Amino acid sequence: MKKIFLLIALLYASQPMYAQQTVESIRKQATASVQQQDFTGAIQILEQGLQQYPDNLEILKDEAYIAYISRDYERAVKIGKSITERQDADEQSFQILGLAYKAIASYKDADKMYKAAIKKFPKSGVLYSEYGDMFTQYGNKREAINQWEKGISAGPAYSGNYYYACKYYADNNNIFWSNIYGEIFVNIETLTKRTTEIKAVLLKNYKSLFGSTANIEALKKDGNDFEKAVASSMLAAMESESGDISPEIITAFRARFLLNWAHTNAANYPYKLFDLQLQLMRDGMFDAYNQWLFGQAINKNKYDNWVYTHDEEMQRFTQYQRNVLFKMPPEQYYGRM
Image (tube, rainbow, N blue to C red; front, side):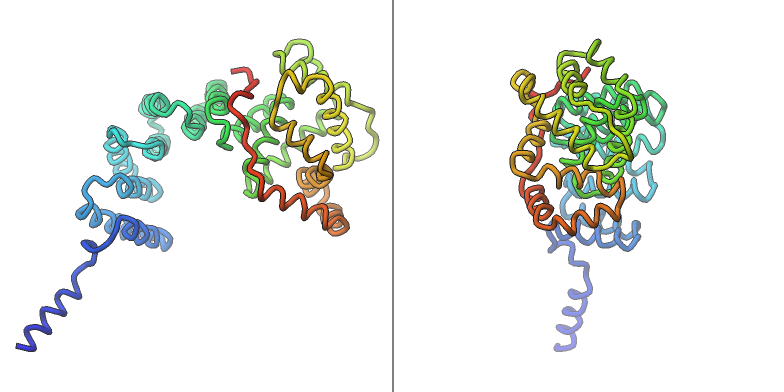
């Protein structure tokens, strides 16, 4: 009799524990398998999880995404289509299906899906961002920037649209919007590889600006009201610069611009980015901010030395940056959408 009980106990212990797991624990196990590059094992874990939690949206999204990253696009599309047709489909459901469609260049299906997704989530910055990315994949850059601009207007807290718009405008010789969107981006997304990339774009833009003001003069003449106002303050701040560009030269120009802006157009065109810069000036952190923006891209050794000799100032700015969330208000969209 004891042997029978022992055998039963051993059989019970050898059975999978999925029936006793939570959705969270199932997803964690699958994630652990993905981290080990065991995509097949991860899918199996999720499939077994669905036996306990049939049609669970989170598990299905995980399975669709793992299928996508393992290049099982047929499975990713099949699951993605099923979950995006559900009433409880969220933004992420559409994101995953969009990635799968783009991976197989199924742009017609992707276009239809993104339109439906944005209709359901009209303020989703991420959906606009990825919709714009879809257009770049088959060469329609003009429609791509239209989607990124819509994303900036509808979901100003999302960083991705600023990132893509900054690069688009830089490539199309519009340093005005490339600078504005790039600086907004690095204040939202402060510590990624993309941050470093956009800082380099900003520096290149300022070199172009100091070399020629034709771009800004054209906006002063033919831009929208906001563009004309900002361009006027920028041109009023210009001085003949000599020698190599430095964070100090850029800082001085930007300080002159801000003082002019504050006294001329700030009340008519409130803009959170300029408000941030003015606040940093008042609080004695503007030099540190501009060193953070441009210093490393110009000369890393000089930047490191500046940080060493201005340790307290940089620490104060760093603490401020960590504790204060930068977010553009939706009513402050002045683009050309």
